[in-house]
Image 1 (tube, helix red, strand yellow):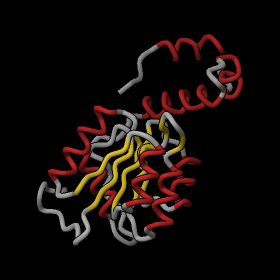
Image 2 (image 1 turned 30 degrees about the horizontal axis):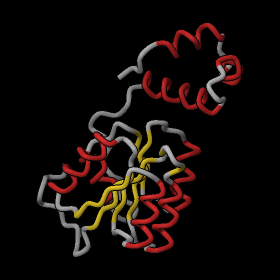
Image 3 (image 1 turned 60 degrees about the vertical axis):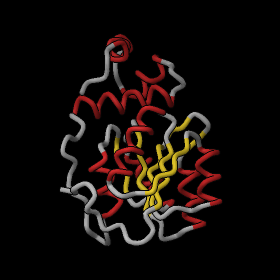
Image 4 (image 1 turned 45 degrees about the vertical axis):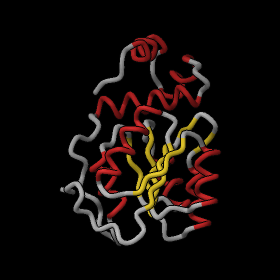
Length: 184
């Protein structure tokens, strides 16, 4: 387990956090500063790309889906400017295809939200073939199922009938699932 203020981050402790969820961004920035990182934040792809271009950081945590685009664009720019950067991609829509795309572009790891600061630090600092330890509180199977349904629903432009067809599910069953809150 990672302890606060005892991390060996090397000389460059710069960290870029990119997320359009302002309260989450503030909480994560504060948690990462407590762990010894020098944090810069961005709330959009454009702001993240600007920081990655002007001041490429040693570490980055980037949300995949941002209001103005795809967080992988920030990862790509950061990788071009600083190939040794360690990047973790976060998303609320965990999918194998997206994880593969993130790693191909150069992300060090891929975590589903909600991820706590310890999970993120472990992923950022994992070296070589070492895998970070499993998360303390991973998503439940019900939550993973719900996330998958939400992702397909979004990809089908919120068309219930098309989503139900693609998921091989009855339309009314899908409507009931969509009407409920997300499981924990």
